[in-house]
Image 1 (spheres, rainbow, N blue to C red):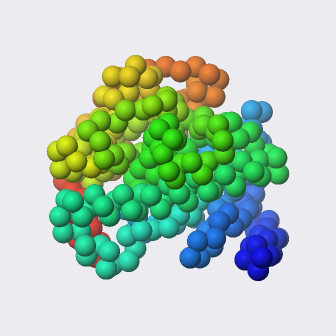
Image 2: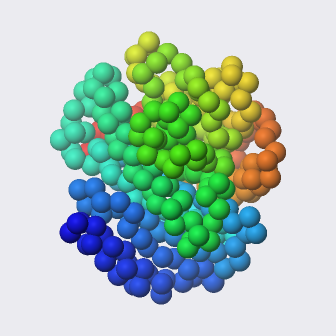
Length: 316
């Protein structure tokens, strides 16, 4: 009872304090949405001119399940740009399973990596599902249509939204925390993947319309597959697309040649592509696209040659 009263009081205080945050006609409010070891929050960016269809975007930050914040510079820029397009944008917290350096020190073999990633991704998906459940429960107050929520994220956030929809399509926990019958209007991940203990990624029911974007050279969130053969592993966009084609499920995949994980931070330059896919899916037009492209804004960096083990070793 005390926890419920505390949480309700905290919600009231945060809403009163957050109403003053405005930029370019937009308004940002901050709400607590679930109590874990600590309280998790989400930011709601209200557009100055909301879309007639009341569509919204739930945005999940990246950072390798070690770092990142719901209001970091990339998240804030993403929210402002999409809000200017009329979307209500919700940027969420989630628990960072690898933030503890002792856990990162356990990354000493593929089997342990698989177990650690399963653990971290599970936490993130559970928190993302809780955020969506909160948003749907408060849809009227937020002025959104819960059937028109697009999920997006970069890197670890991209993994989270893809994993959530994979779990939802296969009735797996923790996606069972989602409102009954709820399905994303679209999923738009930047350099993401799905963690699976099976040899393929079979979808028991169709996933949401999905726009996959990935660097062909990516070894941080592997474009193909990371893990031992015939065991649990991370299946990247190339493998996901193969499975969707095998099941005759329409989707878009944009493959970027010559770069790796740089695609994870491509959003500010991909606004038109994002909105084009969103508009089609929100209008009920489900199409197919498989393209290889390059962009002068996407140039090779250290992320092109770095693999996931090197990334974590460098981060600690």
